Image (cartoon, chains in turn green, orange):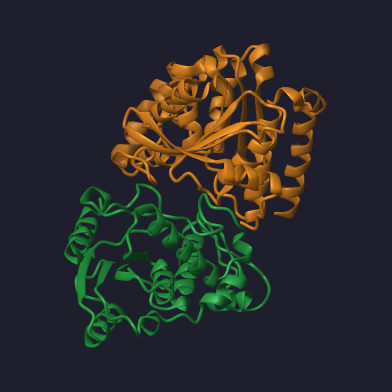
Length: 224
Length: 310
């Protein structure tokens, strides 16, 4: 949709994800940021554009926030249902796995805290029924658990789109606090709410929101 | 998945080409992995459909690169409406397999890449879609993986819930049906499961008429295993000797529809991959040495071990 409105767009899989190469067992958060930088260089070469806009989805918001700190030519930042803290991401994944296990009539062998303790140690952690990343590896967990989106965006004063995709119609406390903090620092913040609750790692049927795409494209058009 | 590409697999990854495949419901986003020039050519292209072409657990990515390193061409793609492909998303269910997408991929590969022989890779819905492609392209298909996929017209549990007597009227209705069932040998009341889906029967007949080899795998504890058992009585039992020689069946202990561990997932992927490799013209000796009977015997042992552990 962005391309249809005249904006070049690059989608990429970081190492060890999707069709890219690499071993997820060895990946750290810094690797993901490095890959985002490589994608940005490619985007500039391919499009000839000097300025970039980052669109971070879920955990990708943390990657985008880290990547734009290393990139001087960033014009805007769009955050789709951002993860605000690394540890929140892991908690949510583990809770989902436990829920799936219970819904399949199994008794989970460990609590979320016990599983996190396992990740603090050496062992990889299997997530029941997870189809994208069925294993969490300590290397990645340790590199990402302490991330804080608000802190990473402390220096951000350019346009931002904060799109919340949740059942509630008002902003969540984390999203409201981030929007306020960015605005107080002088960033022009656009807020969009989509009242829905997609399973971000769900597949069937895929979640598509024309409203979210349209709001994002409107915001992109407004940056020109 | 804890997987580091070998140098040969990495070379195949770097040789991959993006593709837009025209199909009935729009352009499908695909990745073509050409066979390694240094490997003996299999002369076959493995077609791997998926909702997202890297799912589950990037198994198709790994399989495509490994098989390409061993001489197979491979194509993995997103169904229409999924991943990066065009089209409206539809719920993947047993009534509407995406056979048209696979047929579109086969025809595009034939016309643009000179591929003439295909192996269809898949699990569950992907297998059902692959089987549906036999209706149009049976002569071009050399192999089919049919892994923990639906067979009957509806889920066994849903069917039982619908047919369970929930009230006095229900009991009377069921009793009457049972009486009628005494007269009708294949009557509703005597069936413990729903009927084989007419489309499945039609596609399966096309598989039987073809020259393709097929591997069916079910887990003993998969709900879908019950579907296979119904088909075993109604369809597999009537196969002629020639078809029996082409269509292999493996029943694994435990679950394979949703493998409970990553090790199990990898075990299944390894088996799918090794079976495809037996289709390579250069692996004829291996195929002969590992007979179906030997493998069934090994699986029987594994089932006994699994039961003992349980």
